[in-house]
Length: 107
View 1: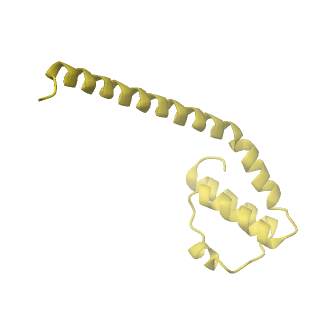
View 2 (view 1 turned 135 degrees about the horizontal axis):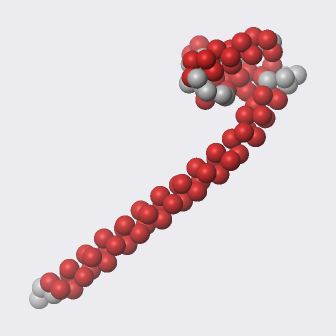
């Protein structure tokens, strides 16, 4: 006994509509998440800038790498991952200014 062609067509239509609804719903959720990220980005940048002044060189390096990563600059093989280097504020400011010039936008 075969499946009723009308039932099959209706079932396929319902499935197609459900998938389209889910896609639209997911797109709306992603757009909402993007708006939230854009809204909090300035606070994140300010926090990274504050961390550049931290007393711990490891914290400063991590903040600097985060800034440079977002500015699309490669750090020397991610500064060999395990190594820690102290960077003074003037050097970091020069690196950030260079990144801004290359991207043409604020970090």
